[in-house]
Image (cartoon, rainbow over all chains, first blue to last red; front, side, top):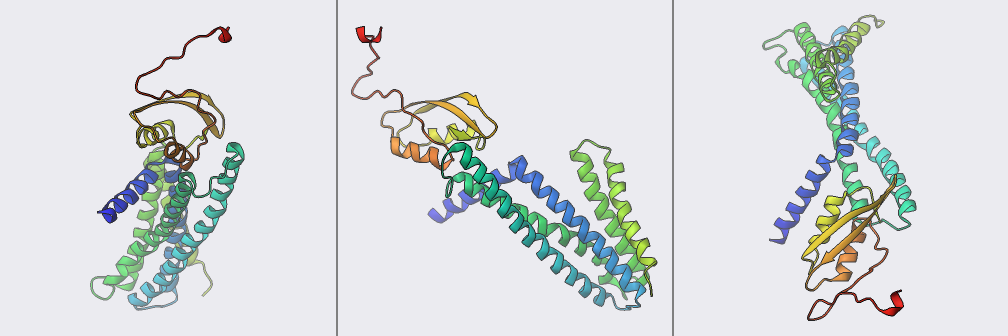
Length: 199
Length: 85
């Protein structure tokens, strides 16, 4: 029974954190920023792989997964350390204003929970940005050729970027189509730039 | 005194959940960039003051003073005496 209530308390605290606009805002920034990095990296990888003469879809997926592991780890790790410092600095400022030690209080624990959510959001961004565009390579040799898989991967990458942009546009009351196109354009620019790579 | 977060709703709700507390009235006295001063009026049959203060401290707050306490079998109102003039 106590396990159930402790689990419920944990769910409640996570729900409260997810409702907190500051936690959402910081997580959103990390998610989109690292998702953007991941998607553009993936487009670079798939175009580079095709232009280098890779003929096997599975090889492209393996390279892409390597990038996903790298960027996913980077996203979690860097934010974990950044937010450790930022939240500690916030707490110290609050302690100065309160003239009290706030270690081991709900205020400190809430910041620790927020830091975990920030780090998870930061890691999920690049995973989505890399794994989705790799999808078409699963069908390489079965339903699509290498060129088609590469073009489809670019299209999926651009679509992911469009969704990121449209989401940012929708929360900031901008025209979501224009905001989506602005982000999606980056994917096309990366694909085109890769065409001019030497070799 | 308490930090801006948690807000007055959560702060008051937590105080109201403490042992022996029947009801809480919270009024914002002063607000600053980082902190707020609240006046809490707490009523209950058998208030556990230590638990209440611990709950306030857990939310990052500090109790500056307890200005009126009423105990006993019946409610005793404050009486004006010559010294009050």
